[in-house]
Image (cartoon, rainbow, N blue to C red; front, side, top):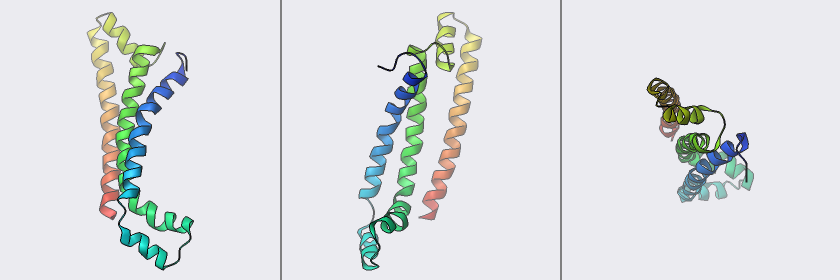
Length: 135
């Protein structure tokens, strides 16, 4: 449907990442303490103010956790898309190196992917812990 270009990689990555973000967001909104919603109603906040001042700040840590997990799955999905349905990219280079038994290139690409994923995960985990500390 998307061909073998950039749109296929983006679509494959997005398909892997959207579901956890949506599930975590739904769960976060469902787990908001009822006393917060009752307090907002008692203060007669309109729906937009209620979302902006009560619901979003209360649900943000769980939503951000979903974004962190969604990022990981999106990275995996994009790499898989590049490995099997692409003409360029790190996944494509990795598959070519595997096919040519080029161990040096395989190890270098694996290290590069691991370094990027580890750094991104560390940054997102740091931000996630800061959000949970606020609550």
